[in-house]
Image (cartoon, rainbow, N blue to C red):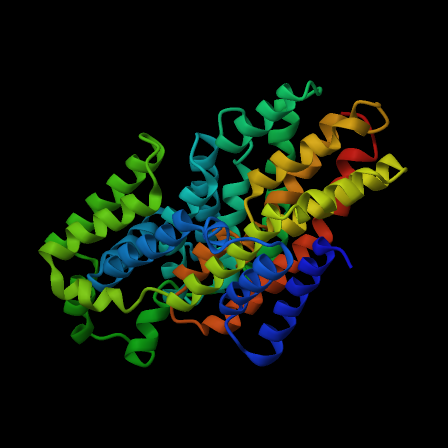
Length: 428
């Protein structure tokens, strides 16, 4: 049995054990990375450690720490009320507001995880307060980020169009952008209806208040409500810090994790008691899970498993079937790794049969881009991990499984649908 096949089978075993024995999948993945890396791939420990996603670790810790402070000092409460006033009290519009905000951020140049890191904690806090499905809100945020993710001036769009130009393939920036925008918009609309979005239109604005007062509201609650929505000094400082985080990520292209943890530390210096409360809110099991899985995927990439799978698909005689398989590989691997990294690996692998002209290069590249990004709601991807980390007042294991199931549905359904729409017609 080849080393590449062994590494894939081990990944399957990790999933099975984690699901049936309730063991943290990240811990299992670290053990698998050590076993496969040293025994199968003859890798040194330093080579395995190189695959540890240090930047993602800092993003998860920094962002969850900062927004835990915001939650502890009431800033998120204030933001929720501000959002409610913005949409005139129509709660049903809030998931779409979050979708639009993340879409605009990525379309104008924000990296998708950066946009999600900024919006997801606020969105998930709102979902918890107004009893909106956390899965609905998280999915809307991630699909919003991907809807704008391939604009001609976006990070993803620039990278993919650059790869296409480098490989001498025909490209169409507008088709790429519109394909991602339309697909994510349609998926968001379906999810909104299926997960109860239409019912939100009938939900009373003061639902949380009714719960607190047993259904009635009284004058005794008014001072508490006024305190929750007023701007205090810590809340103003936190809002300034959040604005600084946005500017740092979008304008100066600074690392989101390092910027977030810096803002959190500055707030902690001034208000240490809030910091002590917030530090316990960092979702360490989630951090372990994500970092472990991505470390194992990095081992697979180092030992050539990803390239081996891509080469196997490229050797398929029927170009249309090969195109579908490439989309599936992009979706499956991207659910656990960098979307752009996967596209950067698979587009060059597809060059030989794309140049033959049997398959539309524009259509396949758009289909691959969409396939590799709509799955990013998976809890193993950066965006899905940020949604999971930002969820409030939920059974985290249950929510993790919901995200995993939804990500699995996207992996199974998205590639054939975009393949039928973008590749098979051959009109692009």
